[in-house]
Image 1: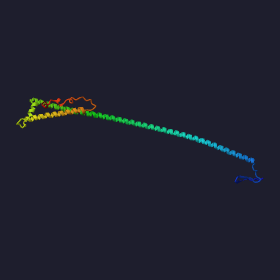
Image 2: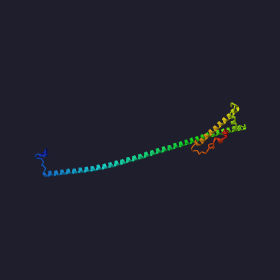
Image 3: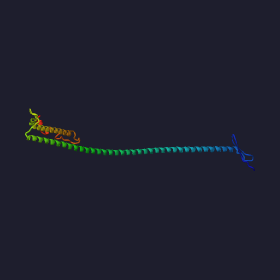
Image 4: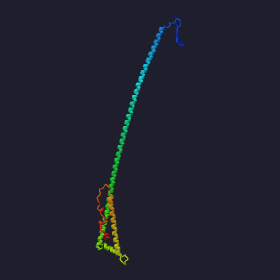
Length: 239
């Protein structure tokens, strides 16, 4: 029995299978209908399966996207926390720098106060030394004036006689020895009084204005008295 291979021909309406005589019989219409239904069912099932897979894939993508968003938020929070920690550390460092700067300022202020106190003590000692020197000069001037008065009194000379000796005599040129001596004595007395008054004035000004401000000052004995109270002036007695 001979067999023939069916041939397929492409037409405008699709593929047509031809069976040569003696070959297998063509399928019946019922069989063809069943094949169509089976093919349609298979296509529908494939489509349903593909849709379900797409939905599952979409859901997976959505979940993954949500996870990524959550991860991004977590990373953002972590970054902000790190920034906050960095800011806190920076503030701590700034606080430490300010504390060190404050300590340096306090140390410098202490050094300045110590230097100012030393300078104040030095100036006060110098002032007291200068004041004592001027008092010694006043005492020396007072002693010299007392010696001059004693010498004059021992020789019986007073202010009135000195004025008389220094007065010009009619018919005399005024160049005798007595006149010269009296003039010299009067000049020395006047110079001594002037120097004493100047020293006392300087002492008064220094004791009132030039004393250190932090020192508790007491009135100096020489600041409340004048030159007339220190020694007797024969010139004032006749003026």
